[in-house]
Length: 487
Image 1: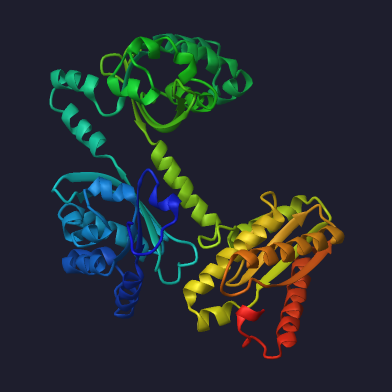
Image 2 (image 1 turned 90 degrees about the vertical axis):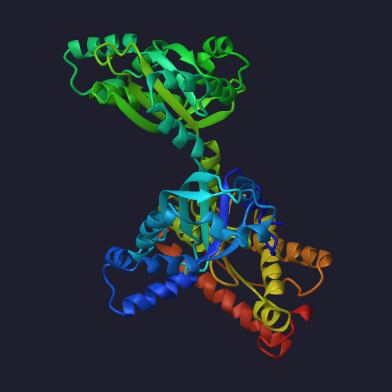
């Protein structure tokens, strides 16, 4: 395992290096500095280089996934933690100061390019994307960091500068996908449109989307390198060149339209994220760099395009986005998503809309008498039960510590009561398969017929839940001191 505690499989097996860290020490350090009257963090770091080291020393690494261990050559998590001084050193000092300054200025994360070192001494250039996990903004006690290894790309870019002859050798063996293309036909088509007196090219493309398709057919590929064949799943260059229609299609259309607009505006060097497709039909997310080679600015007969596969990074970003909209413990939607969905349903319905507010009975007792691990397990079970009872098509969210919210657009009061019945049935079934504290819910519901009453319906459902909560504990006669195992 990469940490002493069990990890979410999505985290541990993500195709990009992920770290879970505790920045609460930095949070406290910043608070002290501000109390001491420090205002200009850049000046403070410049005058006190050791302050950057204080920030580094205040970081606690809580977990790292399998890709991280592979990237840095660590045997296991303990081996990595014991050698963090080898990983974080030298070139990363200035960038670390910049990242810390971003947090100082109120950001909940930072993105940068930095340098790490493998345990065998290898330099690794990385793109860093860090974000405070939602719910921990008050103390930064949980920060997730994604590292993308861009060492090959950085080294290739540096080597290409040495000489044209060496660059030709690098083309075939470059670790990024390289294409040499002839855009002269596209240039003629664009100039023909300009000759028609068209001035607003974007509007022209909106009215004539077929022009983009015609331009795509005018791309003439002169050469590709080995990494291109590997990226797109071809055994030879002829296979790629004979199947360009499978690579350049569908979602690429809009990206290519933007590329044409840039060319219309005279931008002969461009970079953007785009989508291509492998020959097997899989989406390939790429970072595209486009440059008309020197000497061909008037004809566009030689264009160099490099494609860096960022599919893994996109998956990691999707995972980070998932964390931003979901509760990491129960895997249900979080409060922020619930509020967004409430606003959307308020505007669009369909009505009637029923609201169910659910409170988990006995959580505090479980935490106090058995431990927080047991309480967390009870919350996970609650999430499983609610999702099973309500289904995947409705909004089920953890909106508080032991409180959950459910939105049922198009559901009347009878539908809501049936949903509550399913919740209790699933909770009873859940208790048959788990030992320890029993799963028990206090539930309140309300239904509204129009948009103006939805917020009030939430309030009524909340009040009904609290009434059910009081009744539950009064029934046991000791108001929240009753042991949850006998709920």
